[in-house]
Image (cartoon, rainbow, N blue to C red; front, side, top):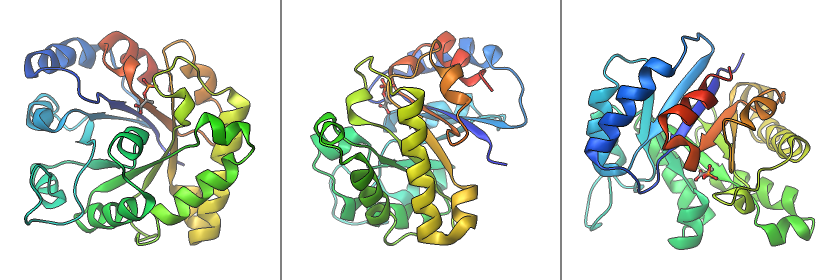
Length: 248
Ligand code: PEP
């Protein structure tokens, strides 16, 4: 049984003081649940602030990005080995903003997935089609190719989470319909089965991301292949993110 995972992608938002204020309000609002996980992806400089706020172990946390090398002449980059030493559980890979604004491609994602797993953390690999790709009927090909290429160097017995995030739904207020989300998640799960056998397909959580709110989360959370959410805008507010986490 795959646990439901509610993940907050704060992007480049919040100061240390705002992060502390968020948790003061958020933690009492989240109900106890054995089959639900909550993870926070703050900006890099807030990782230790978030770690201090989450020191009772009931929440998970991770980085929004990292390099694929442990160390070296990579000015401005973050080592996955250091993230692991800090205690991070996850690192995002291939978020659409990294792909479109920072030129990250599938080959780079594959190296990052491998490096994150090698440090004992869980890569959360993001895939998703643009509006033009959806309208031209190539959604399935696009997401299958991103998944296969992103996992090309992965340990398929290792930790892994996938986030399906249609680019046209991220930060736009346009959420995928339940049918669109379930179809994409089914395609991705079948692809995991093809790549790593039924054990991989049945154990890996596939999250939906793209304009998830407290209003639309419940219906999407009931879809058989949706194992949680990666939430941007609505995760910045403690009340709305708690309402999303509490749907399961
Ligand atoms: C995201 O950035 O991963 C995301 C899904 O953003 P939003 O929820 O704001 O669409």
